[in-house]
Image (tube, rainbow, N blue to C red; front, side, top):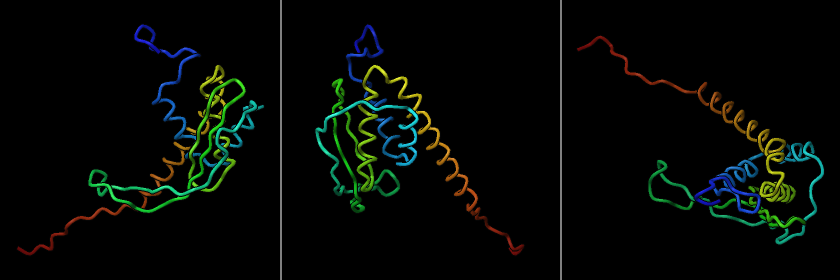
Length: 159
């Protein structure tokens, strides 16, 4: 990408915000949904491991009220891996839990999104996963809204 042409060419790296978004979708997606989307896409390219899937722990941090001082909330299990497609694109993945296949598939999609077939991968894999995640968020919000309690002050009529 350059100042004269704001759209990336096939030889340039994708926009970091766009990559962050698709990696988030891949990490948050249900492994079964990801597998189904990849299967529907078709044959996957061959690859070589740069880092085979590794399972480990990561520290989760939180903030009081979302803006306060950060504190260590605890640890969670995560799986990571890195690979290189035969065509040269490198994919990485970090996913919650111990599912090495989930991490592998997420890394493959990440690498494919950096290649010439990115639009097809977006349409066949990422768009359906994004839609499913959005539907799950709406369902969760509706369920939470159904339990909302409105508190109010009753006036007893006494002065």
